Length: 445
Image (cartoon, rainbow, N blue to C red; front, side):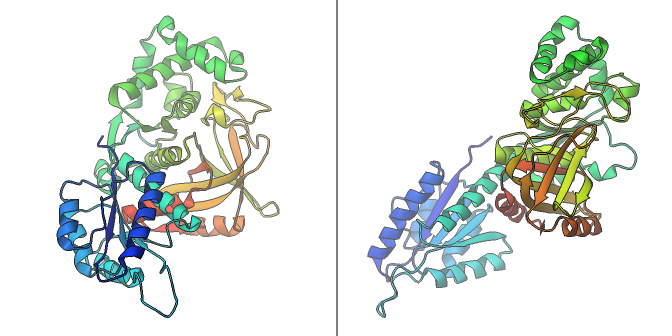
């Protein structure tokens, strides 16, 4: 994959106060380089179209931070848009001095000119305002930079569909053309039986490392019947080999009924282990659920919870998310550890069976698909509470910032899918920026 390249484009004209412009230029370069050392910055201010052209000529940016050091007319932005089609952040500088004297920069009028041109080109963009050292501005720039990096990484993502969605779960299906066109990711497919057949062909010795790793990271795995433990290890190796051979970064796997009826052992704990291995792994073959997981893992640097909203408590202002038992071991409460049990419906193990640990900041996220094929983001923030396991399987209880009942009522009426992702940390700003870069609407609760 080409290395992510952010580019700073500071434009202006020499008829304004050049001492103020130079000071802002140096301070802006310092801030951007601190956010990401890869930022490409010019050696000097770009005070003519010819200087802008010469600077842009060798570049291949993945993000452009366009800044009016002083007022500059629409030709400057037009030149950028003529050459590149990548995310643009428009940054206006605060006027440094208001003393009844000369207007030193007039960056804001330049921003209006540049934004008008962006609209004329029908290009989505983000706008931020402030002097280089302002914390709110640096926060905005960091969100936008992180979102641009995520968009760049998504364009080299290979996501796998392992088997088909069960009947009635069509919301999780994806088309390879839609996936590539909207997100830039490559969708590959394989039948679940192919991995089952591969798993059956391994020897106990080949699977021993996978058996040992699961035993090390879980609690009570030894209580699972030996055949199911060995079959889990075979399946874990089959999935791991497939991932490595094909460069897969995320997957959505069919789970029931095949792994119970055709293999005799659930895939739940395999998916749990893969999530801790850094591979976003969703169950019930929910491809856009897996893509949501991958985005959350990239942003937070840690596994995410994938599950159904199953309970609402207006008194606590909480929504409980639950699933059968595929949550990453590292999400488990420290007082219980990653307990292994049985699948709640089929009563066959191993499947994870624990409540998740508390964390003070959480983001609920979903990449949703509308019936007409368009996409949208669900976003909500809150906190994960310290709660024991709520039901057989894995669960997490989120106290939302805004009224939980209103969130449930509105998202149900808007027809969102029944699978959501819970991410550690507050990342709504970054994900909202990602939606903007992708040209997608956001439902933020």
